[in-house]
Image (cartoon, rainbow over all chains, first blue to last red):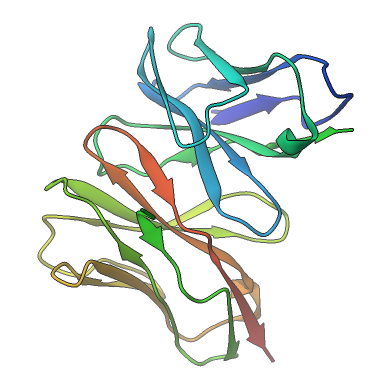
Length: 113
Length: 113
C-alpha cells in the first residue's frame, strides 16, 4: 500500500499563475483533508471532504478550490497564486469517526514569487 | 477562538528523562478525539497516540502516554525516557464529530545528550 501520495513534491510559481496539487489514497477512507503549514507553525485546515461528492471549508479556504474526484482522489487548486500562499501543503485521509488518526502524505513545498 | 492551545513553543529535556508537553482544547461536541503527532526535521507527520472523549483511562503507547483531564480540557503528552531521536516538533490535534480537524501551533522538543 502506498498510503497517501501527493504530487508534485516541489513547485515554484509566479504570482498569478495557477496550479493543481494532486492527492490520492489507497486505504478506502471516506474523509480527506488539505492543510497548509507555514514555517514554524501548525497545520491549518484549508478544505476537507467527508465523502465522495462533498467538500467543506476549513479555517483558511480563501484563494483555494478543491475537487473530490472520486473516493481515492482529492485535488487542491490555486487559481491565481499569491506570495502569501507560499507554504508546505499536506493532504491527509482518515476513517470517518473522530476516533481514527489521519494519515498524511509527504507534503508539497510551494513557493510563489 | 483557538480550539487547540499549546503554550510551550520550545522545550528542552535531558536524555533519559521524562518530559510533558502541554495541550488544552476547546469544544462543545460531546464526542471528539485528541491526537498527538510528531514531525521530525524531515517533515513527515507521524501519529503517536489517541485519546477518545469517552475513554475512562489515559492512553498509552510504549514510551508515550496521554494525561487526559476532561474537566480541565487538557490532553498533555508525556514522553518517558527521552531519546535523541525524540527531538522534533510535536502537535496536538482534535477531531470533532462534524469531521473538522484542528491542530495546535506545536512544541519543538530538543533532547540534550
